[in-house]
Length: 567
Ligand SMILES: Cc1cc2nc3c(=O)[nH]c(=O)nc-3n(C[C@H](O)[C@H](O)[C@H](O)COP(=O)(O)OP(=O)(O)OC[C@H]3O[C@@H](n4cnc5c(N)ncnc54)[C@H](O)[C@@H]3O)c2cc1C
Image (cartoon, rainbow, N blue to C red; front, top):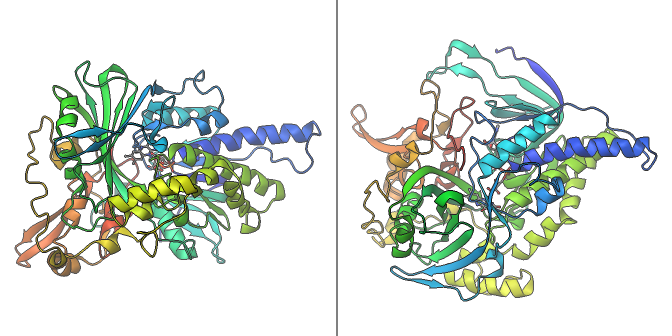
């Protein structure tokens, strides 16, 4: 039995992404305002006073594991900090030009009018990693404790299933599970309120949702995978401030997908491709979809003569309003992507994540005022969300992704109709609006060899088209190899037998970081699954997409993972 230190805090935030950083800062600022109003007699009730606020982050610094596009709608940051530009928020540039391209194999058709959800003029292009680093500094200046390299590995409950904090991961355990010379046990951080802001497919949010049935009566979450590269291109190839979204090539009409190209300062371009992880064909490889996207003449033209600087990949929770879990339970709130706050139609979640965090902060003040941390008070969070602009934005697009589960044309027709009717779903919708991706994957036998040559023309030239290993190198990934794998395969026998036969081990393809390989094993004399966990970029695709749901992503030793500085 390991003896663990206990640290007491008032509020502990898990994950230093935009949701929790905005939440913590807003909490600190609002307590000061609230107490001042009481002192001056403008408000009645209890003062909150000084409270201990902590943020644990699994990356080696705030921003290390943050990956986004990103075009930010400034609506939330303006509410948080009206003078964010004067205070040095590291936005890169302002969007000056929008375009939507429909790509056929060799041509590009520019939409005569950019669809309203994709209009971004006046918004900001930035590196979300940089912005979070800066927000982290603002939090520390305000007296908030930030603990990087501290993954929260478990939720702590009392005997009534009330959340009482989190346990952080142990350090210094070897690959056999034995303590090494530098062993340090994780600590138990006890708090009156725990806020989970872990991003897409949060590992604690997954545990909590299942244990407390927070998704009971909700539709299944659906995910996409965004694969991104940052490029420096020759002057004149792509203008600063231009934002392009694409539809069509290389996705087939049954697979949700689209690309983006954002022009940053100094001829840097953010380019990426999103593939819906609710695809049917197990041969699909989202990393190769992106590489294939770059072979399109119009895209290749932009990158010609340029240099790839960085790589990354991350899942996006695309289900929206219908897939949002209950946002509270005793002692806990869920914010940001791990609670499905992203607007899939606009591919934007930074502003909704931040706003959800700020509303959580206002609920926390209420809880301290009433000295009540149960659902009785915390349920007000959901009410606040439904009364805010988040509801006005997410409710009208509640059927957006669902319509695409019947293919591109159903998706486009429905999106147009939904736009006119504030989100009503029309014909061609699947019966259940959102079906989990792993349940939609077809067996190889159902495909009859269709699309087997999907990636025939994708040749890794290492100049414009990269294989996974080269890309992973550009993600700056590092994990200490002498630790237990954080990718738990619950039943390896299935991998070697049923999955090999039925799906051809799709983990080798859906993972964008070459983590999974089938390798001949001399002892068993058959192909067995090899897990190169040190390549993992923490995108969580394997946890989402495995057709048997036997891959469980848990947090590795603190600090391990990608280095997305500037991404
Ligand atoms: C490829 C891509 C492109 C996108 N483009 C855009 C865009 O252009 N505009 C836009 O508005 N949105 C965009 N989004 C969405 C946007 O990035 C997210 O909605 C937003 O980052 C969500 O914020 P969050 O705080 O909820 O989570 P995240 O930003 O994911 O942050 C979560 C943090 O929690 C940490 N963490 C997770 N689990 C633990 C744990 N157990 N213990 C400790 N720390 C933990 C992570 O390391 C991370 O730092 C994009 C997303 C992707 C993936």
